[in-house]
Length: 391
Image (cartoon, rainbow, N blue to C red; front, side, top):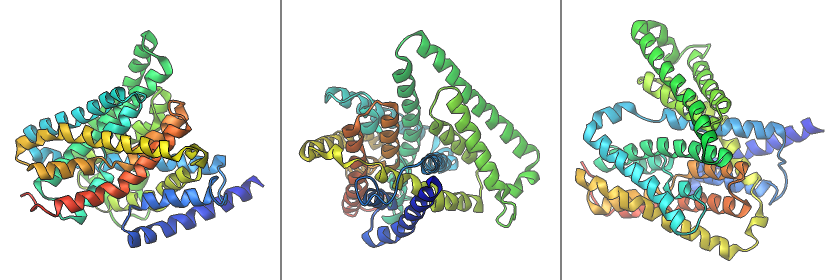
């Protein structure tokens, strides 16, 4: 009976995964938004065609793990090097300022400190898509936004790990002990980085097969999975979220293999075509409409979070004015940075699992992710269309 329920749920979810990009293209929305909405339609709050089982939960967790790996792998270290030290320093200060502003605004508004991560979260997913669609990817604004978003992803996930440890162990000697254990993950990641760079330099011909387009064994894909699962498992063993390990694995992969050729497309095809849609659909499936018992209060909370998120992005991002970016473009960039759909959904899911967020707060964050993922990119396109692309 359990196997038939697993099979039936999986079929329904993958029909939704197949339909989502088709609907997204027609509606000009992010596929992730459509996947969440379809999950809501077939889940516990809708037609109840999909039931959460250990098997679907496992695939959903693997989906978000793979998603974090791809997020890390999207970081363009060649771009960071080309920007130069001055741009990197300013972008780092802006990203740190955004995160600290988010935490400060959450405290000022009386929200739980964990929601500060929601207000200060940054990502490159929707950001990259919007920059491509508006022709701003190669512009000065686009390159700086990608730099701020990439650094911001690092800071957001590291802060997420810190909140996790503080929630579990409080402030005291136990927290210091667990933080010391957590350093193991970063030490191992650094040693792996040094070892892989040495091996690639010493014997580059042995690593050509990893990025070869016609390798029947797909050894490069297998290497990506080994690295992702190893660091994700190590993160869990030292008391951190496995998502941080997966993100570090992706960043490590991107740093060592700067020219990955077809391997990027292969990994993205596996993630976006199989694992990742399951995670977003599962978010909708498990969304409980009973959390919307007071919809007006929830909508006010979402609106307040959206406004605070925009403010947290706008003020620190003024730092890039030093690099010659016009104020109109900075305002457009702040709007776009305020739509990190992927990280918001991940923060909501982890907050609910850890017991930091209740059902209403988690629902508010998911609704914020959906609305900001739909509205903010449109606002960016309208605003950036009034200004010429920066050189």
